[in-house]
Length: 110
Image 1 (cartoon, rainbow, N blue to C red):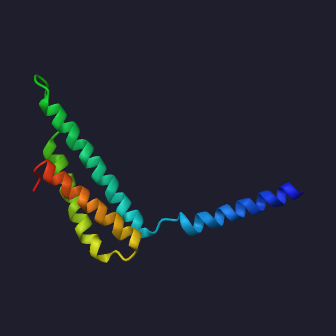
Image 2: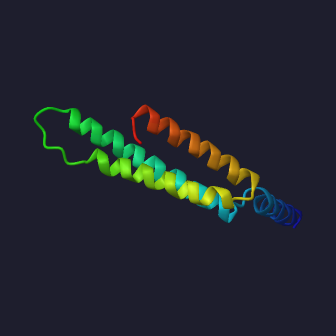
Image 3: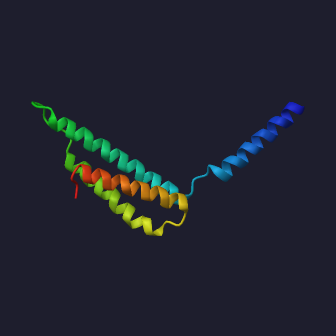
């Protein structure tokens, strides 16, 4: 019986810790979704450039499409960034913005 009560107390404490510290807000979910979109776009861009560099193969992927995906993520981020109020979401958004700028500069994307 003591083991059962102890187990219930541990589970309850774990649940409280999870709900108070590990729940993600709507703003942070939005920024995370943009991060995933950016990651997918960069992977597509790298794959497209890799395919374009191989001689004798038909290029299936289009680097321009991946560039447009990156530009779309940048545009969405610029739209949502002024509306963010939570510190974590703002920090993640700034980090994502710097990653996008770095990627665009490195790959000469306007």
